[in-house]
Image (cartoon, rainbow, N blue to C red; front, side, top):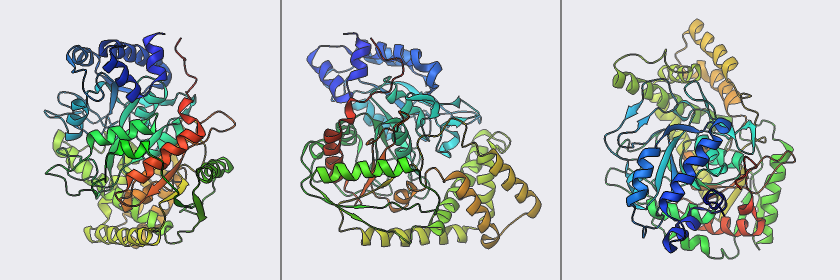
Length: 498
């Protein structure tokens, strides 16, 4: 069997076991991953900056006793410090090159992972499809006419295409779970404070952004979390300590759980029949596993909640643009995409008091939801309202142009006067993915489960959200559903290795 075929068939844990036994070498795995990356690069366009030379050098000297020794990996081109590597954030603004590694990167390296590339993202992670003026369109290995989701779409495409078995990802409003749902992968949005973002930032988007990974298997997701979790001295939050290892949790039977299912769109917008079919598939698997499932409603998670989320993101984008202007020594409004510029302008129009008020309303609603669902072990709900979209079909140009022209004409300054604009912004940008932001606000863990494939052969995952700090139950449930469904054997049809 060729090494490229081994790379295609095994998850990260399996590859590391082969290295530990001496059946394959880190050099062979890295060379196979690079060959696969180049073979699929024209089809999926998921590579931001190749790290091939550094990867080959690292493979020669890696300690083969490390937990994930020699396993090829990808790091997202956003919100991370990689010493000597340019990070573009999917933008035409000049790249940022750190002289340090983020704590998380150091932990990846200490585990034995070998980064072979950085992966594409939309500009500053602001779209849930990975398309940017800087890098172009990243495509889905299941069908290259469709999106791989965003903003960790480059990482998801590389994993789904068999370039790497797992890849770094981040999530501020669904950016781990949406690509997983579109690409047939497992994607855990961790609890707030579980994995540090330091020292690049202490927190991002008012604590809503978390980092972890996308992977093929639940056991990889669990092992990667074991190897990277834990607060850093600069971390403003610390998630509840696990009772044991996450890998142990993923390996054990979950017992009989009490689950809920939430089906409504927080925006009151249409949901495709196939999305509801995917949710029904998850419910059926849960019942097959012996769990009870109860239908619930969350009436307070509605348009006002989502509008407040958009306000906080807009203010964060305004702050980001100020920071980037300071870094490069000039205004950057002319160098960013219109969608980014519009969000930044809206953020500048919000007063500090208005943003603070929005954050407090979000927190109050999140507390209510956590309290009212605390007797459930997990809540099942959709991630994407429709099957993976055709590339380019969520182009925000029309909405952005309308809003920008309106801003030019009216010079709006007050919360009440721009309320209707946020409503239009939500309907144009979140109609595809209205659910994931709920748990970025609440800080709860939520895992994407690749339970369904549509009649057209496209993945369509759903999510299970858990209690704050309780990734262990989610991983145990996910591993059981993985076993019952057989999804681990699924592979995208793109250029299957011999």
